[in-house]
Image (cartoon, rainbow, N blue to C red; front, top):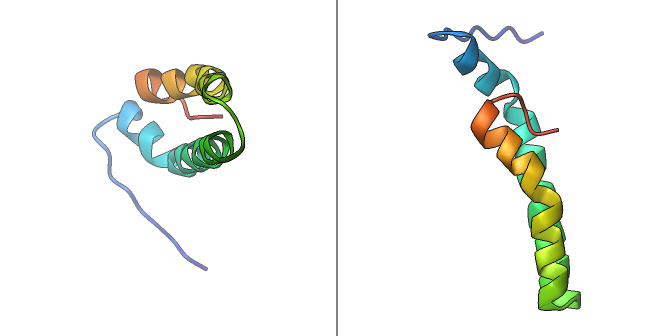
Length: 68
């Protein structure tokens, strides 16, 4: 068993730590999608990937509510 204690200044900072795995997953998914679009697609495909991930990135960065 592993017990982890994190002290935070407030709820916003706590959400940041609690959602870290979601942020990591979002960035991993974005990386894989961009890699595939660059390798196998066109510039339009790359733009589609960026546009599809933008709402989740915006949510994760601006609201600290998690990525997915």
